[in-house]
Length: 544
Image 1 (cartoon, rainbow, N blue to C red):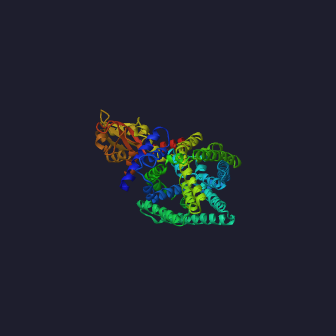
Image 2: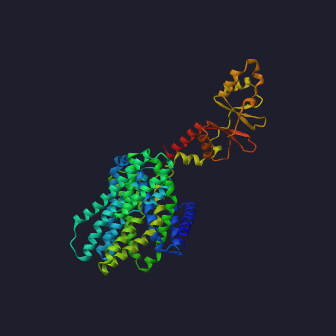
Image 3: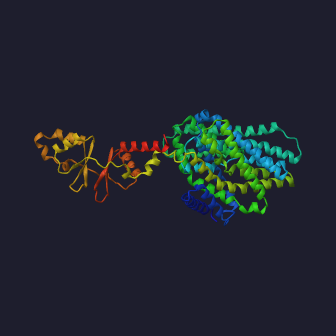
């Protein structure tokens, strides 16, 4: 089938599935994965493994954007204020998971090589699904911040453990001597190259901020740099999430204000790419594999020991690091997801061991099958658990923006209803008396049926008063000097539409009518008053 057709089918039905699951109070990412299951290996198989492999560049770009956007949240003051608790949690949950999974699998299979490999993979956490849930529910607070940092740093720790476990397992399988120095050198080299690429990319983006005058070029330039970062990381066979993470961290810390435009542009662009990414995650999974290979008990042991390690390790790390109670209690619930890094490392293990011998090849095949099968489970339960964690911590809907507030209102919600009006037959003396009694600077002129005719400002009245003698004031009526209102808006229209008109035309106020046909006056909206109301609501919803 045509590749573009499959991309369209994936994005369309993925979006539809996400919305259905959202209506059921389940994170949208779960819906994307379920649609992928239906379209892929578990379902009708129109997304074949060969096709999924062809989509690897797009998948890598999606992972790079995920790492970049996580980096945008990790400002240095976060590490200064909560660095101790973050590192305490990271090492406790990562190492405890490594030890528990390694021990449980070794006891079950009597195979130390298999156990230590599973332990290293278990420490990895998939940032993509976690970040998607946090964005969907606009979370904000210490749990959200810590969770973003941990899922980002988890992969770095997993790479170090993998380098250690992979060489140790290979030494046992080949009955060779193990070299700890070689392990640390290899891990340090990979992390060092990734850091260098990421930091340089961040500085390039910083330079582009000051170079780009045309705002429409922000997105293509930014995407180009991210794609280059992903490409270099792939070329040097290092973790692309790490490189893009460092690019995001660098940019947000050296240009905290100026970089917001880049991050917002990337976030808006990435939505369909994320949906396609998660559909492919679901399409790759084959539920029948684990049952066909008879690995159910092994998979369950892996899942249980990994879950206990993540939850208990996060709790102990939070206590030792004196983290906020919400972090200590609920962080473990947000660390269940497992996907890209774990699957990638599992495939790497299979390739590295398959040419050594039958025993090593069987170990590699077992690792791949179990990781793929358990990824299906944790990718389904992981997002709802993240939602539960941030809900319990009281951090949902706290990261809303001014635009979110504006989009949630209609004009009628912030209308000034009891505004002073001037009748069409009022003379200058009557208008002056009305102005004296009112604090308003702008007045709508209406006919006897309250239909809008136009508006008069204090400035308009002053000009007329200077031109007219005292005896002629009764001859000048409101309808004669009213400025026709060419810009009005119906009370039922979205507030965003009114704000756009006010900003685009540089207006101070806008008359509001009950409906545009009758033009019966309903009130006014003043730009400054509306924005003050939006700011108050923004602070209230953020809990400040």
